[in-house]
Length: 343
Image 1: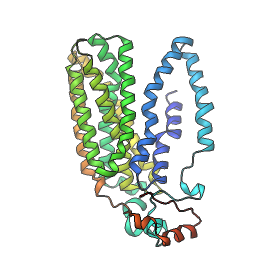
Image 2: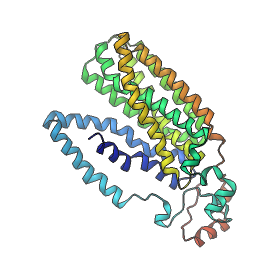
Image 3: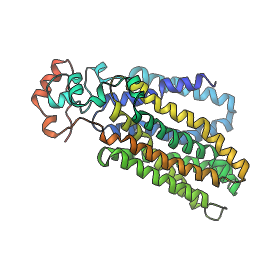
Image 4: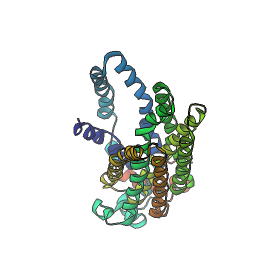
């Protein structure tokens, strides 16, 4: 289970979907990744269905029900609809620089005007400081801070005095606001990746302050404030860091580069929940663990700013370029259908 389940999630989950979406979208990449990750936020609500199924037929049979959902719904979607690259359907990426400018092939334009997004290999990316700063940011934000809090939030609220049902509802509320944050992450296309991550960090730290302030059951609004703020902040951050990584290193080898972010998250996820429990055991409360998470969130934001994805060279698009006749001819000569960029 410990080997097959993670492998399955890697082969059909975000390590595959993030580079696929980046292949399909050059322009509005933040919006595309945000919409794609909304499913992850919805899964927190889907957990209620899993809990209900367990209560009705037991956890062993519930696994068969969940497996049936994967076979009946997920497998056909991937088999019939999923295409890793737009070229597989005879199309070009939305905002393709070669089509927009109409002079030369995608590879030629990428090499001349956007070296940061075309020529990177995984080995070359690993030899840059920006790569490791982005991995460190993901390691600290989601791997350490987010997973530590998520692993202990229900126990925390039960220790405060709330029922397990109420605690589970807070967990679902986190997922709902995470979906909202993921949808809103498209704002990074306009205000920049760094500012979006900063907003996510401020919201998440503020949410943890609210969580620390919850000492008893007299102020349940503090838990609602935590769930909404932390969920929205985590939702803003997740698509933005993948969009930022794609801004710097996008190309035909972006798959393993995107996967490295999840590797960092996984390593942090192995450390964070355990370390949070250790801090609770030696201190008798979660305050020190949550303060530690705040520090990790701040450092994750600093690492993201140092990586500076906003300074990566990205294709410039204008309405005139988007409707260039030469761009149409160039793309049709390559056997692709030109996709107009809406103004």
